[in-house]
Each structure stands twice: as structure tokens, then as C-alpha cells.
Image 1: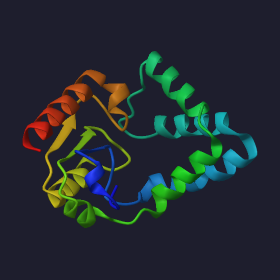
Image 2: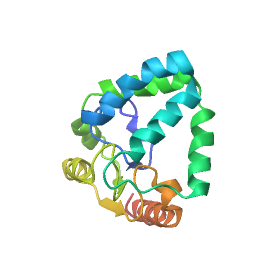
Image 3: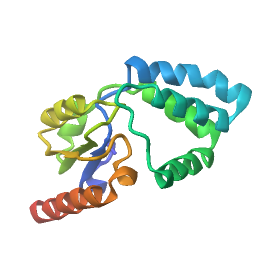
Length: 165
């Protein structure tokens, strides 16, 4: 994207941070690598569910959301998950480069995102000079947790970007 921003009309950063993750999420990724190698995807998923449930303020997903999240995770390629984990740990901060791309950008996140805090994402939006939207009743997967509000947020931004582009 940064190599050729003219190929894009806009960019939405949905539950995304300015750089790699740190703190407990990074530790989780490090802990899951041997579980994946020794026991497979289902064991990793179960361990992640148990870790999530042990967090203060944990809100369990609906049965439908839980089923979707499990099926989506188990359908993943293990090597792709390892690649994603490595990218999440090692990603440098490229916000200044992204701001220089001169694209309409929206930063949006679930109110309870626990990967990159809403405060971190708000700071990234300020650095980008971009609008920032918090999606209520959602955490790190607002398209699953609150699809109606997520769609409304995206459509409003795209219409605005279209009118100002």
C-alpha cells in the first residue's frame, strides 16, 4: 500500500495499531507457538478461549459468535497463523509514512478492543489526522460483535471519502 498509494481511494484501519503488539498479547503469541506445534489448531483455540475467559471484565460471546469464531480459527492455515503472529510482533511503526500517502483514512475500533487499546488507536488517528470512531458493544472483532454499527461506520466513511476525493 505504501509503495503505491495511488492504487487506493481510501484506507480503513479497523482494530489495528500503529506497530507490533506488546504486553500480554505478545506473551500469548509466544506461549501458543509450542501448543500449535505439539497439539494443533484446536488446542490453540481452546487455550486462547480459556485465557480470554480469565481476563477481568470478560464478556462471553453469544453461542453464534463463538461458533463462528471457532470455525474461522480452525479453518486457518497454521503457517498463516505463524506468519501473522510474527508480523504482529515485529511490525514497525509506519504511521508517518502512511500519513504522507495523502489518502482519506479512518481509524475505527471496538470499544473494548484488547489487542490495541482504543487509546492507542485514538493516538494513531491523531498522528494520521484521520477521523476516529469507536464501535460500541464490540471488542477486537466488531464486524462479528456489532455488524450493524460496523457497516454504518464504514458506509459513512466511504461516502464521505467519495465526496471529498
